Every structure is written in structure tokens, then in C-alpha cells.
Image 1 (cartoon, rainbow, N blue to C red):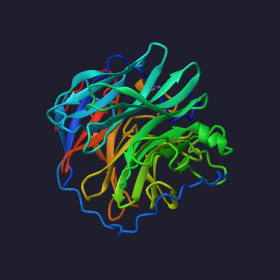
Image 2: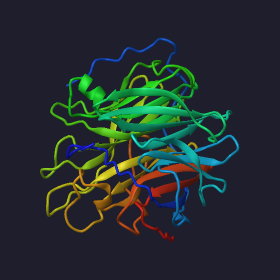
Image 3: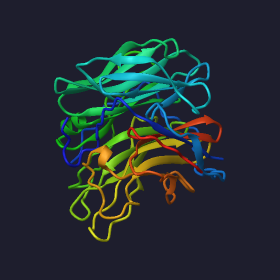
Image 4: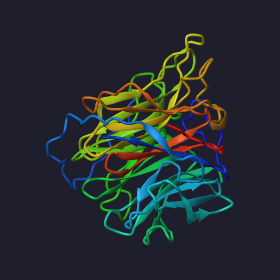
Amino acid sequence: MTPPSWSLRRCLPRRLMTFALLTASFGACAPEEALPNDSQPDTQPVAQVESPLPAGGWRVLMPSGGAPIRGITRRADGVLIGGSSWGHGIDVWTSTNGGASWALHGSVANNPNVEFGDVTMRAIPGTHTVFCAFREYANGQFRVTITRSDNDGDGWVYDSTVVGPTSRFVGAPFLFQRGNGDLQVYYDSELLAAQGGFPGHQWIAMQGRQGTTGAWTAYGTVTVSRDKRAGALSREGMPTVVQLAGDRIMAVVEGVEAFPTGGARANVINAVQSWDGGRTWDDSLRRTVYSSRIDAGSGRRYNAYVPYAIRVGNGPVGVAFCTDEDKAGPPDLSSAPVDQRNCHVGFVTTTSNFETWSAPSPVWTGTSRNYTPGLFERAPNDVIAVIDGLGTNRVLQR
């Protein structure tokens, strides 16, 4: 794929990747989608105030080595499991010590004629089933594919195709299980934007199942996140979704500036919320989670990109992301290749409610070549951050 200059996705297949693991102690308009009538919105009270994060910082857990990219989940036996793509295949990684070290545990897929990417996993509580979602690219077309393991990730079978094949980009899936048990997949979609009359834009789409099996048609195809302002360029991607209370959920996404700053569009991070488990999304609660400072010399904004959101217990939502705002000189272009961008990893949280966000704090500033941070709560108020080190060793200290 040759992405346009304001594309969100910067694909970088690599056969050799190393990772840094850290720990932190956390104590215009598209048609309306047709919605099925199989359930009603949750009416239980919604929490409005969050608990503060306990004091504590990030420390080194694993300085280098292989590990999953972004999406980690916990098997029925407590082992952590996740995946990563090296281009023409998807590896499975497991950890028996809470992420302190990882071991290869087989493969989800291998095909010399297919480029795989955007791997994520989700285990279904109370079962031995683990789903793996990923993007495929072959013969000039994209698709979002789901595979399934019914034995805790020891073996994998084809489950379904969510969307595609299509020549318009679809990818970066994220699996989320709603409170009622429905399995949902959120993903980047140039296809949905084009179908809505906005070719060249990219929106976040959602499709879901009733329960964890069957067709991905229980919700139609929902437009989750897009900028509806007149004249705005709306390109959003890399969704993660967290549950706030009952059926109130939040999607955090990467975007580009809807209107350029200093003649260029920087990456920014946005969030939007749903009150009914993802069936509809409340634009009045659309927020900018983080946008970096503006460089005085160039007049351009620095970038904030590839976010990953998590909610720890009953506390705030935390988001890890990449940013170049600490570099000297002008910002990187949002179209620059990943391995040529300057990047530290930052972190923000919601504050007094789920609509306001803190100032950033550093997660990792030791090197300037990083990508795709991921977060996972391995124990109550104990979160690990997984950082793709782009093939270089990391030695982290705190």
C-alpha cells in the first residue's frame, strides 16, 4: 500500500522486532445505521467521578526481546497471550510471569502471498476460546479477518471475514466484548467513509455478533468516530475501546487535524462515547484526548499518534501514545515512515470525569525510535506497557 500523505496507517513489516516492557502502578453526513431491536440500552446509573491514580512511576520489567504488539489478553489458565506480525505470518507469544519475559508459542497464520498486520487478541472469560483479529492485504485488496482458538491459543482455525476484500483500506481491528456478552470488532474503514459520500476520508466502523458466534450483522455497520464539521478532513484509525459503566463505553482513536496547522496536518488523539453499548455514538462527548504543542519555527503542530486506552478497575481511563513533541526542530510529517519518525511515549488520563484529560507524563524517553505502545492490566492497579522498539535493543531504568 502506498498511503496518502495524511494516511493514519504506517505499515512496517519486520521479521526482527524487539520490545520494551515497563510497568506503572495505577492505584457531509452518513446515513443513519439501521439498528436491530434485540435489546434495550442499559439503564443502570453511570459513574461520573473517577478515583485518582495511586502514586508511582514506570520501571523496567523487560529491557529487550520479543513480545506481542499492542493487544494482550489472559488465557483461562492465567497465562498472558498476544500476537505480532512479521509480514507474511503472525506469531503467538505467551508469558507465564506477568509479562516479565515472553516465549514464542506457535503461529496463527503463514502465507507468502499475504501481508498480515494489526494483530489483536481477546480471550473469552470462562472458556478456552481466544479470538485473533488482523488485517490482510493481497492482490491489491484489504480485508479484516478473524481466527479462533478453542484450546487457549495452542491451535487456530479460520473463524470469519468481517469486511473485504476491498481496494479501500480496512484494518487495525480491535476486539471488544460488550457487557451483555456480544463480541464486537472496531476497525479503520476508508470503505465506510466512501460509502457515506466521503472518498479519501477514513472512519471507525463497528460490527458485532449476538454472543460470540455467527454473522457480524447484529448491529449493522456502525459509524463510531468521524469529524462531522463542514470542510473537515476526517481520517481516524487505530481504535481501542474501554467500558466506563454499564453500557457506557469510550473509543479512543488516532486522527489527523481536521484543518491543517502551519500548512500540514499533524496526528492527534480523539475520543467519543456511546451510552448504549456501541449502537450509537454521542458526538456531544467527542473530545480531543491530546494534541501536541505547535512548533514556533515552522508553525506546525507536533504529532500524537497510535494511542492505546485502558481503564484500570473503577478508576480513570489511561492512554499511552507516541509523540515527537520533544524533538528539536520541526515536527515530523504524519506521512513519514515509522522507522524515520522521532518518538517518545507519553501517557494521559481522564481527570474529574470521563470528558477531561490530564497533562501528559512520560512513559519512555530513552530513545527516539518507538511505535505502537500497548497497555494491559496484569493485576488490580498494576499495568504493563508494551512498546515496539523497531528492531533495536532497549535498556530501561527508573
